[in-house]
Image (cartoon, rainbow, N blue to C red; front, side, top):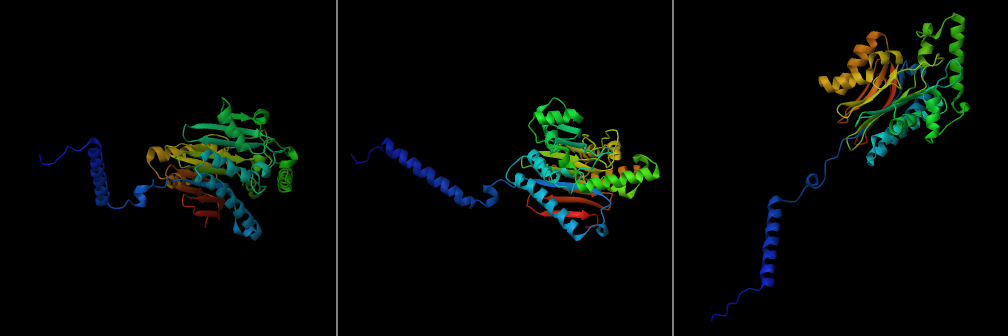
Length: 360
């Protein structure tokens, strides 16, 4: 007998553990240390872009105080949505909260700062579209909804319809528990004076608003529509637009802002767009959808598509205005055929762009 003994089960198990541990350590040593790139997922693209209206916005007509005020509110608005996206929030929430900032400011032609119709009242329009399922909602001609963009989202989520108008839109928003305001909330001194001037010009010329559309002052009363497009970390696009329309408008006129495909469009397969400008031309040109179609079907970049539609289509018809948009990779477009457009953008890295004039 040589004194050799058969290993016990426990001894065999310990030996196998030692062999496996050694093999794992050897494998790790051969591969080298894991880099940060290997140890974490790459940053997903996200971003947000907004506008506050396009038109004849000239430096010579803008005081330093007004220039500063617009830039500050644009920065506040875009940063509001960006913070939501950076924290992993949805593009829907980012668009809604961002537009709230502008609807609550008297500087823009939306919500509190909306222009007045021929009867001296507001008629509020808004639309929203979700690029994931192509869901959409809109309201037109509302008079008591504090934040019309929220009503558009509720129409999308909590009704079987896409668009509600007039008293019905107000009633629906109230039933949904959305904030309501009396007429005085919307009646700012700036908009009252603008209406008085337009109606004085109309009376002096013995013409209707249609004949006065070429008036430089009246054209200025279309400026201020607000809009937002956001891309969240889940890859979902959303777009929203809100406006008070046109000063001295008659017959319950409705522009492009509440019309899906004209003033607002979003599709995860291509891009999201919010438009601002002379609504009749944007409706006829189906601007927002046309840009998305050029991206989807012709493979144009969002910037190329926006330029083609705004300059090659709308302008040739005689219309003016602009758009902001993001594609599904976070690339941005802020295009206009006017001297200016209030606009701002923030990308995934937090880079901020705020501009007013076309030549910035």
